[in-house]
Each structure stands twice: as C-alpha cells, then as structure tokens.
Length: 346
Ligand SMILES: [Ca+2]
Ligand SMILES: [Ca+2]
Ligand SMILES: [Ca+2]
Ligand SMILES: [Ca+2]
Image (tube, rainbow, N blue to C red; front, side, top):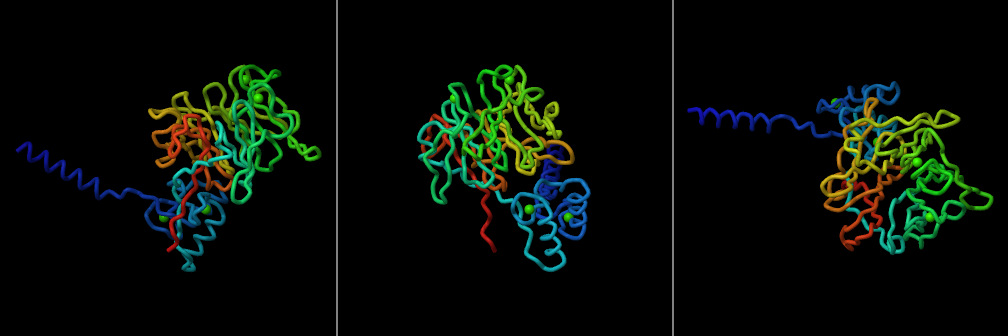
C-alpha cells in the first residue's frame, strides 16, 4: 500500500516536472511570459532609455541575432509586432573552435587579443608581445610589436583599446611596484611604433600581481586581475579610481584569471579552474551586478585547457588559447577562434 502510494507520488512529481514550462529563451520575450507583444516593447524601451530592469533571460532582448540588446532590437521588435516584420532571431550559439594554424601557431602562442576591426591579432610568445595581420584570407607571419614594448624582461597579456591608440600589457620589468604590473604604451603615429610604456601606478598597481588588463570600448572601465581577484577600476577623467572586487558570481574560488570585457561592458569572459583545468566562464552585468558565471558549453570548453579569452568588438568571435586540443593535440597552447553560428535562414 505504502509502496503504491510512493509510486503514485513519484509519477505525479515526474508529470509535474515534465509539464512545468522550462522557460526556454524566446527571442523578443523580454519579460519572460512566453508571449512576444507590446508589453515586451514597453519593457525594452524602459530598459534601453530609462535604466529599467534588464531582459529577464540573458539575450531575450536580442532579436536581430547579434548578441547585443540595443535600439536596433527595439526597432526590429516594433516592426515584428506591428508591421509583420521578420521573426525575432536570438543570439546564435558558439561553433566548433578553429585552430589558427601556421604561421601564428608554429611556436607557442598564448594570450590573444583581437583588435576592434578584427584585422590585427596581438598575442604573447615566450616573453614578448607579437602581432599578426589578417589579409582577408590568411594571417601574416607574426613579428614583435614595433617600438618600446618588448624588453629582456617578461611582457604578456596584450590588450589594444578599441580606438587602436593604447597597448596595455603586463610586465615584470624594473620600475614597477613589485611582481607583475600593468603598463600602457601609446601608438606613435609619427614613427609608426609603440611609445615608451608608462606604469599605471597606484591604485591599479601594487606589490601583488597586477595583470590581464581589458577595457570597455569607451575606455571608461579597466578590468584586471589583482592578487587573486578580478577587479574593475573606473576612469574618473584624470586617473583610475580605487579598484573594486567583482562579486562572488565572478570571484568564486580564487582561481579566476584572464578577465576580458565585451565592448559594451555587459559581458565578462574569464577563466576559472575546475576538474578539467582552466575553463572559460561568462558572467553578465544584469540589474547592477555580475550574474553567477557559467562555463561556456562544449564545443568551446571540453576536456582541454582553455584560457585567455578575447571577445571581438562585435561579440561574435571569441579567440582563446588552448592546449592538448584536437586536431593537433599540441602540448604547448595554441590560439583558437570560435564564432557564433547563425542558423540557416528560413
Ligand atoms: Ca513577453
Ligand atoms: Ca541585437
Ligand atoms: Ca620580453
Ligand atoms: Ca604589482
């Protein structure tokens, strides 16, 4: 009797579970009520123009499939709801990572950073910073960045600002505050080279490790690693404000590193160590705080190390370094790129 009751209960719970809506993401369903209508348009206007709450599910407000939520989505949604415009189409998933191959990956190549136009790839090799340019069909043979960035000391983790004028990097060269520090070099357009780097100084640098700089496209926020925490510092017009440690959604177990911020400052990629070694995680800035980070699903993360993510300006390509990954299973990390794969148009 008791066993029968237990079976009935189990069946009832199972049925309830199956019938409960999963709240799968419906592009354009900004308020997450399973309909796409005027209420979503109002919600989106409030979010975009009045600082109202974010779309309930990440990317629900992206209806034109570029993984950003902005005015262009609002126009698209109005067109869909009132003028029978095309169906909303959400942020596409990441495709299978491609090995950049030679000449970039002929030797160890780590810590990639893609320029805003997508045509220059900066990375580090041994203890210097290199670059390679895209011709439209292939990457050029890498060369050390011209100018005053590389020394006999350690330089790595390049980041070039969206305007292409500043090269941030980490270095253990003399003249710093101890351990790694963040330095910045300005492009010298007269001599066509990177100028003499300047130490960012306090409050960004201190006697701990200060590394992995990454800036928003407006150069207003600097994300970096300091000690064992990912932090952000705001530009106040004349200098960097005291850094703030990101919350537990990002800094969870003191193995986080390699922060990389999207151009709009709303998506943060970084790495955290788990069972498989370093893996790429992502956190979203939602309603004033960083969400609990998720690992990027396979085929990006898999049972291989994945580190140093660099998101393209448009958010559609993610460069990173990875070791022991097919097809070449190279033990020294190589640079890969994964791209958002749009579904075939109906
Ligand atoms: Ca809705
Ligand atoms: Ca969009
Ligand atoms: Ca060096
Ligand atoms: Ca330091």
